[in-house]
Amino acid sequence: MEEPIQLSIPLPRSIDTRIYIHLTIKSKAILLFLTTASAEELGTPTPLGSFVYALPDKYNPSQPLSTPLLTVEPTIELTTRMAKLLARKTQLPTYVGNSMSFASTGLGGTVEEEMEAFKQVVQLVVAKLQHVIASSVDGLQNGVSP
Image (cartoon, rainbow, N blue to C red; front, side, top):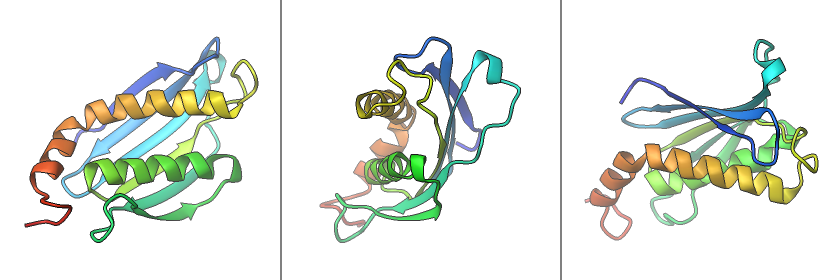
């Protein structure tokens, strides 16, 4: 699948802000970009957030390796977690760019609010990656390619 998938979901505990998801599935890699915008911000560019590369570890499939390519402090932790999770599930190299802001949530971006958004994004993205996940499980035996 080469065509990007573009989706949006409401930012949890926020009145008018949405999470925008841009997912590109290549034969050898996954590329995911995440950002947030409210209704009045739709035409304005958002600041660049963190960008992380993660790849599955052949010898320890449950612990993918990751490298931050661009670090922006408020977004690096969530970006790294997302990249590692997707690399582990798909067994493909994964690039994740994230500039999500939780400032417009009810409590201004608590850990619980971030985790709720993270969970919703993961559920949606993993649903879109089911065919990739299924093929990676079929192609691996005991975590090693045949």
